[in-house]
Amino acid sequence: MPMNDQGRPSRPTSAAAETAAPRGTFTGNRALDLEEALIFEIGRPDTSGVDLPAPSAAKARLGSLARKAPLGLPGLSEPEAVRHYVRLSRRNYSIDAGLYPLGSCTMKHNPRLNEKMARLAGFSDVHPLQPTSTVPGALELIGEVGRWLTELTGMAAVAMSPKAGAHGELAGMMAIKAALKARGLDKPVVLVPESAHGTNPATAAAIGFEVRAVPARADGTVGAADVRAAIDERVGAIMLTNPNTCGIFEPEVAEIAAAIHEAGGYFYCDGANFNAIVGKVRPGDFGVDAMHINLHKTFSTPHGGGGPGAGPVVLSERLAAFAPLPFVRVTDGEAVLVENPEDTADGETPYGRLTAFHGQMGMFTRAYAYMLSHGADGLRQASEDAVLSANYLRACLSDVMTLPFPDHPSMHEVLFDDRFLDGTGVTTLDFAKAMIDEGYHPMTMYFPLVVHGAMLIEPTESESKAALDLFAATLRDLVFAATGGDSERFTGAPRFAPRRRLDETRAARSPKLRWDKPAAAE
Ligand SMILES: *Cc1c(COP(=O)(O)O)cnc(C)c1O
Image (cartoon, rainbow, N blue to C red; front, side, top):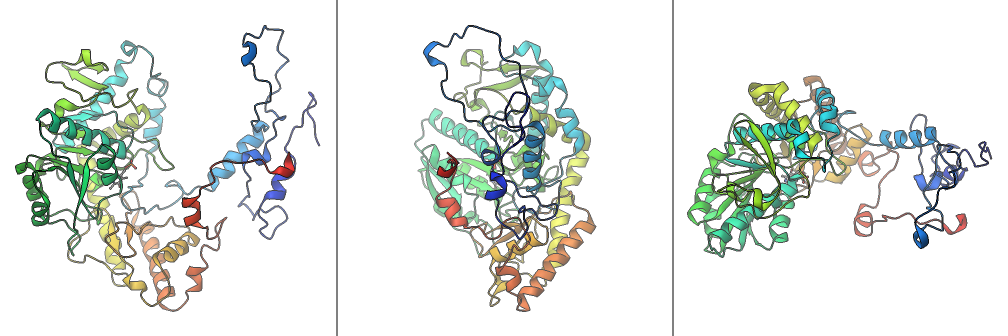
């Protein structure tokens, strides 16, 4: 084993090669598709990327708290560490690698200009604990993004601190809860349509509301009459997605808003699909009281893999006062950070503190760069192009794939069901796996739940016509393979991915989140 000048091994043992799944080659690699073991399997505690001189005899002041056993962290040389992470990153499908048609997720191109702006030291190096007097530019930027959001949505106020869409839902629903309480109303029920994203009922339930389902109509929309029928004096709010998760603009949304307002309740709108309507419709105009905006969807900042994201929630006049701390208040062009209840002004009655720190600075900077580089007209154009792309795919595919709701035009995403696979022995899941073999990330599958075997495709405005044509042609080829009896291409898929079919149920039910050292390696 090679040793460095300090007598420590300079590279890992061959344990990695031994544990790699045999894939018909000696190394487990397949050409440039490289196998990669866990870092704990390739690293060794006694290997180090740097050789530091032995410490001079500094007096240890940890007393009995000093660590006696080694930390047990895997050690790798610098090139080994770089390779490990680069190899893993090559396993990751990303919007920079190819078309990412995941419906409801708005996986759009993140312009490199955003990255350049986010790396400006004045934004990227801001420390949450540095005095706010040293960061007036960052505060001004937060205020400006907020101003764009309230302008684009036609709303009175915005809470910029939520860190994700679901967190924005929480922030907005807590504002509604506080407003009901301030009015002395006991209205513990929230209406949620069957087609809603799972985060909606989860949010309502998490803060103590009872969730009452509103049935979906056969045409994929929510009916004002059904909402009225579900409303009684106990109903305090409705959570509705518009455009909805079937990719349809709710035709009766204004009537639904009126119904909940007449009953003294509030209208929470899930704004994850805002990309379809920016610059076209202002949610404030159709009666929304609170709506989160996924900056990481509509305003291009990168997302996936759990973050980072940002989910500002815009609030109507009726809820504005309840916006949680911390928030940025802009008066006469000057932005100040309000963190404590004693710093609030007249008419500001925050329901509490939502986050320890304001953020996400990087996401705000990217979103602002996106807004400024597009301008108001460019943002509208992006929405129009996103809707055009989805409807183009719909036109390319609807003669061979089945539309559950053919009577409504699609917004920014097109929803198919699995009737076109009837009798083929191929399921939506099989179809998605075969797409992986073709080099595509699958579309959103089995969501929304109101459609059997749902396939929800959102191409976004980022894709060229050539890219959409190739995608449509690929799906058509797969449809013909399925209906032509080649079910092996589907049930055996993915054939070319680093891993084949995984036991997804077991992975979800009993996830292995911890690596235990194999006994033999002790
Ligand atoms: C993405 C999404 C959410 C949740 O947003 P996160 O940022 O992932 O927390 C909620 N509702 C809908 C419809 C979504 O698409």
